[in-house]
Length: 252
Ligand code: NAD
Image 1 (cartoon, rainbow, N blue to C red):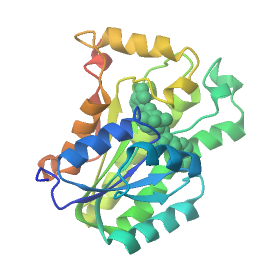
Image 2 (image 1 turned 45 degrees about the horizontal axis):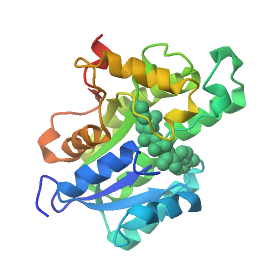
Image 3 (image 1 turned 180 degrees about the vertical axis):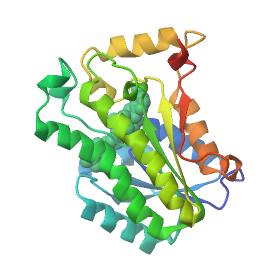
């Protein structure tokens, strides 16, 4: 299929099911003609993917909690498809007991786990991804407004998202030597598996939807379309940025 991503090979990390923001990216990128490679966390996720993703799509295991897994995954991607042109990182995790109550309740161990999976993973993915990425490549991660505002129950994930957005700026500076761009999409709240880990998540989604300028929340397709633009050569002027795709929620 022809489109703004024709001829580009793009890795998407973080499709868990059809509600995932990464699945919205998958659909939009496919529609724009990209060849897609998916990575998945574990066998349970692969089983889920096999229910709705064509078996012709390359799928590679990658639990990002260990950098060596990331290295192995990008080696396998290179072996199977050669160089890539972009990657989408749609991965985050915090223990559900830390997505409630007060921030001071979090232990150092759980704080470190959230940072490792939600922030350091972008750095390791950029480290190994850049080794097989063509010049002119693009990296996109997913963040949330809880990085700047104290959103109830979001707690250590908000702190992780602040670190993630800072990482985007540093990575953009460093990877510019290879002409690779790095940006973040700050998406409005959508009911996904990850969000249901936050206590009273329906209030979080309601709040986000109410504050959207027209009262209607963003969809995974709208997030995906922005990801497709950021993967494309139409967005070469954007680098190191966090782009809101939240129907204006952050304005109000
Ligand atoms: P999701 O549950 O569909 O996706 C989260 C993904 O993270 C899953 O595929 C899961 O397998 C993966 N993951 C977790 N730990 C991992 C590990 N150790 N190794 C590899 N993969 C791992 O939820 P989502 O909401 O689509 O989340 C995708 C991204 O979007 C996250 O970074 C999330 O914070 C961000 N985001 C979500 C919203 C929202 O409202 N849903 C808003 C803004 C940003």
